[in-house]
Image 1 (cartoon, rainbow over the protein chains, first blue to last red):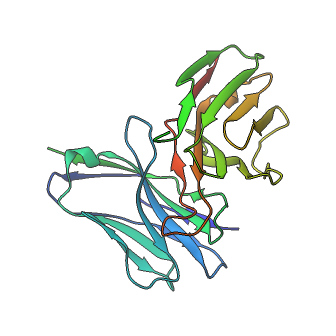
Image 2: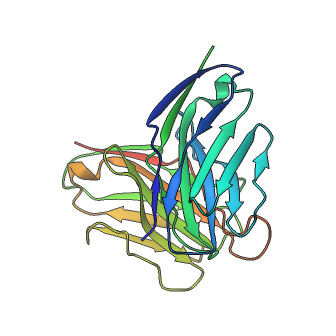
Length: 115
Length: 117
């Protein structure tokens, strides 16, 4: 069975700083997808970034980037130049590399960006 | 539509009553998923539908929970004889499963917050 672990329940950083959220996972699969989703107080789950395990290059989306270490089963999210709108719950998630399968979520990290 | 929509946004019901939650996926998405988000359990998978295949019901917590998807589009999650422990946010997601850079990525609706008194 797959598991996803986020070891930081809550974090706070000052606006404009860089913050890194940690995630580790456990799987016997070789091919899979990893995601970071953001859930602001509005409750809407928003995709932040997606990584395919067969790709060695780390995914980036504007201020968001990941550090994907397949051998270590680690998938951290870096947010650069953090903004107040980044305040949210962040979930790390795993999905087998099938195009229709359930997502396994971590427990989440609540991130506060302070003015 | 532009995104996944869910209704109602909030639902308060009395213990023992039945409730129906609705999900309207993104047009063209063939896969539809239901998840439950509760304080103690985080995000849990409930059920998913893919095209005309039999749904994967492996996450449904009890036989009080059921779901259907009519015409390969709208889905309804039904909870019978609600219990207080059913109180949670119910999230729906959809995805397309054909090729492409984002194939398989699930897009979520805003959820329905259910409170069972």
